[in-house]
Image (cartoon, rainbow, N blue to C red; front, side):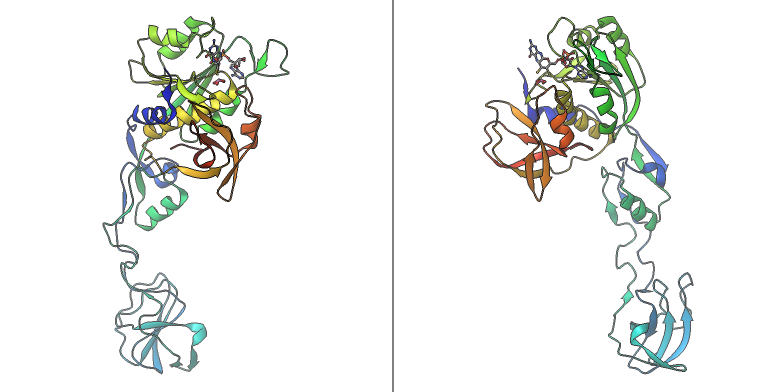
Length: 380
Ligand SMILES: Nc1nc2c(c(=O)[nH]1)N[C@H]1C(S)=C(S)[C@@H](COP(=O)(O)OP(=O)(O)OC[C@H]3O[C@@H](n4cnc5c(N)ncnc54)[C@H](O)[C@@H]3O)O[C@H]1N2
Ligand code: MOO
C-alpha cells in the first residue's frame, strides 16, 4: 500500500534528528542552520548616534559651534547646552544633551554661528533603538544566509553555532547505463547522476558510485561508509534486476516508506540501516527520481541539517487533470502567483522539469486552484 504523499513527506522529515553542532567562524557557517538563536551581545546603537552628516544642536537656534566629532571617535566629553552646536558625521556618537541633528544641507553658517530649523529628536538614533543586548534576533533552525552573517557580525559575534551539513553518497545502478556518448538501443545515458549534485545544496556530496545490477555489489556499497544518507538510483521496482528491497531486508534495514501514492515516482522508498544511516531509493525513471528527491530526500536532509520547516510556497494552478487517488507532481514555471505547466512530464523524461522552476503538488481530485509548489534548490 503506497503512503499518501503528504504523510510520506512528514515521515521523511521525522525520520532524522539534527546532526551535531559546531562553533564556526562566520564565513564557514554560510548555508548551514543555526543550532542556537543569534542573540544581540550589545545594544544597537551602543549609544545615541547621528543619522546624518550635520550638526547636533540643543535648544532654539541660532547656535554656537563648539566642537566636532567624526565616525570612529568616542562619545564627546562635552555636554551640549542650550544654544550650542556640535559638528557630527553619520554614525558618530552625539554629545550628551543633544536635542536633534540638522543635516548639513539645511544649515547655514557664519563663522562659528549656525542657523537652521531643528526638529526635536530628529536624526538622532537613540541607544538600543534597533535592539537591546540579549534580544534574540534570529531563531534556532533558521538558515544562515548572507544577511544573517552580516547581522550576527553587527550584533558582536565572531562565530555561530551551526549544525553540520549531512554527508550524502550516491549509488547509481543499472547494466544499461552509459556515462558518456550517444544512447543507443538497449543503452541509455545516466541522467540522474548529473542531476543530483545541484539538488544537494544543503548537503555535502562525498561520492558517486556506479554499480552493475548486482545485489552483492549493492550490499557492499550500502554496508559501510562515512555518509549520513545513501541515495540509490534505480532497482526500486519488482523486475529481476531490482534488488534494492531484498538487499535492504538482508541488511536488516527498517523500511519507513515503501512506495508513495504519487505520480511519477511511486516506487520511491526510505529506510534506516541498523547503524542509523538513512537510505533513500530513487526510482530509475529520471523524472520519477526528481520527484523522489523533492518528496523524500529534501525533507530528510533538512531535518538532518537542523533546518526548521518553512511555510509552504503556493501558486494558482489551472486544472491539469488530477489523478483519482494519487498526488501528481507537475513541472511548472511561475509568474505572478500563477503556475503554468511546462508539459513534457513523462516519468522517463526530464524535458518538462528542465523547462520548469518548480514542481506543483496536485492532490487527488484537484480541479484548479491554489497548490503547493516545490522548488528545486532546497526543501520544506
Ligand atoms: N511490474 C512493474 N514494473 C514497473 C513498475 C511497477 O509498479 N510494476 N513501476 C514502474 C515505475 S513507476 C518505475 S518509476 C520504474 C522504477 O524502476 P527501478 O527503480 O527499478 O529502475 P530500473 O528498472 O533500473 O529503471 C527504470 C527505467 O529507468 C531507466 N533508468 C534507470 N536508471 C537511470 C539513470 N540513472 N538515468 C537514466 N535512466 C535510468 C532505465 O533504463 C529504465 O528505463 O519501474 C517501472 N516498472
Ligand atoms: O515512478 Mo514511475 O512512472 O511513476 O516513473
